[in-house]
Image (cartoon, rainbow, N blue to C red):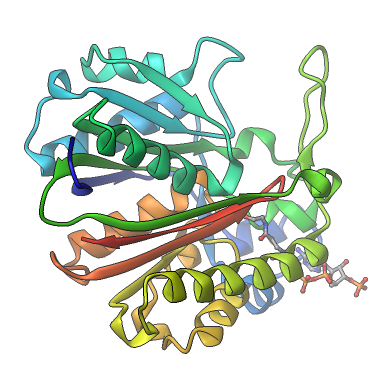
Length: 314
Ligand code: UT7
């Protein structure tokens, strides 16, 4: 049994097609000015014919390469996604074969909190000794469930994938995690189709989601620091779910963390749901902002609602 689950590799992938705010304003009644002011988003990526598994495969291989391990050494794969390629089998099993692994693999659905829930699940496997090397991926092709005529949602979402490899460690790793769910808010944010003969799109009461997100995530960030006996000065980086710059800034302000200690990628990626945290993490690791030994706070909220945080010594 290992004392900690440590992140030993990160990876990510964005499909090449860029959709700018100006592109969207040609087909729906919106503007670059409105989208930038209300959300901070300037552009997002959209798949053409790539699947959720295709994006996950590239992100996973990048993370395995950084970790310096072969896919055959993995004990478990958890894929967080809201946009699986099929109702079944799990997209994680397709990913397992694509990267040449042979371990158990399952999907986890917790919408925009999916990466936090998957990371926490992987940590439990490692700490109980049930697994030592675990691949956690967040991968989304949200453009398939966005109504491109609905300006209240079409401007927000993007496609992409991010991944981490976790390993059992005696030194350091995940220090704390906290998960919450409250299913009362089903109608605030959902795809309401019944899977049988309807194609569903994201439906969202944006304003309500906004207020609840700021509220829940701010309280959670405070609670996380308190339970870890830490002050926010001891945090090196916040790596939040990337939904709206105004949500991210409000949470950072509440825990007195300056924005230069927050990793922000939504300007170029939009909201990529379960992929957004590992995408942001990988960018900041690869450009040298995040260094080994630093303390990172991940937090995010999604449909349900489900929300959570993970505090990591990287
Ligand atoms: O990952 C977790 C899930 N999602 C989120 O976290 C999203 C949370 N919510 C938000 O980010 C924000 O609520 C939005 C960005 C979705 C909307 O911003 P808002 O400041 O809450 O705007 P609003 O919904 O209150 O709408 C204000 C006005 C409305 O017009 P009226 O009624 O004041 O005339 C909307 O019809 O803006 C209008 N509007 C737009 N105008 C131009 C809504 N969408 C657009 C648009 N372009 N794309």
